[in-house]
Amino acid sequence: NMKFQEQLDEAHEMINKLKNEAEEKKHCLVSLEKKQQETQEKLLNVSENLIKLKDELITQLRAKNELDETVASERASRQEAKALMKQLHESITEEQSKRREAEEKVQRLTADLKRAEQLRLSKEVQDVPIVPQSSLLKRLSDSMTEERSKRQEAEKKINELMTDLKQSKQSSAGT
Image (cartoon, rainbow, N blue to C red; front, side):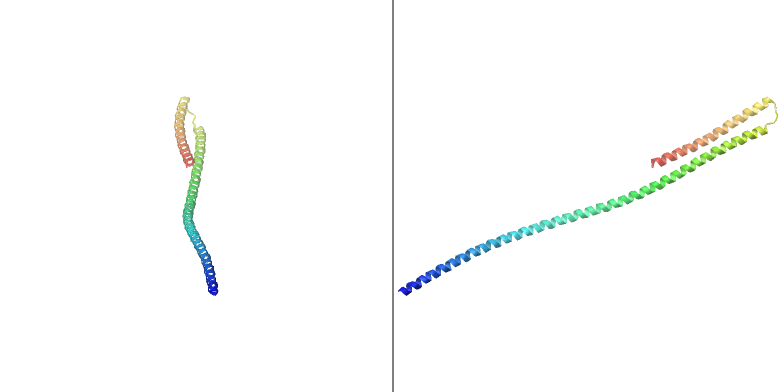
């Protein structure tokens, strides 16, 4: 009986020990399940963060592509503007050259006109025959009238050239 009681006590002890171990293992299993749950949640968060980062990267790449296109467009516009400025500069240079030519032409015509006037006056003095004073006055009057009309024609040509020159200057200043 005693032996049986000892065996029974040992069996109860063993059962309690096994119960305690089972309880500890149950706690460990619950703890492991919690840790597994937490790990899965962390993995889910990491996955969501990676998706967000991927979306942000795609957005940034699109923005970079748009910026690159804008920069390329700006470069093309700048080169176009440079080409237009070069054309404008060439046009201005050409207009200035035309203006100088016109000014030189006006100066030559003015000089030619003065020389012609001096030659005519010296020739008239040499060609004046001794004639009665009334006929001399008539010739002088006719000569002066002719001189006036020639001078008016020359002044008209000079004015036309000056007008052309002014217009050329204004058009080159306007461009």
